[in-house]
Image (cartoon, rainbow, N blue to C red):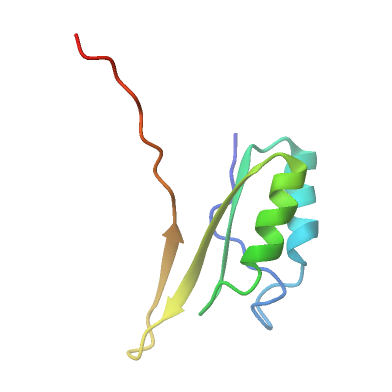
Length: 89
C-alpha cells in the first residue's frame, strides 16, 4: 500500500494546486489509510487538511518543508506518539 508522505497543497504557492479537502478525499477514495501534508515553509493547509482527513476517516500527518538560509530544504514531519500500556508480569 502506497502512502503519500510529501504532498503539498495549493497553500505552497506555485508548488501545489489542490486544496486540502480534495487531497484528503482523493486519499480516502484510493483506499490509502493515511497521508502527509508538508507545505513549503509553514503549515498553512494543516487545519483544513486535518479536519477533512478526520471526516474522510484517514490519518493526517502534518509537517512542513523548511528552507534554511543556506538554500537547502528539509522536510520536517510532525508526529504524535501514543503510549502503549503494558501489564507488569
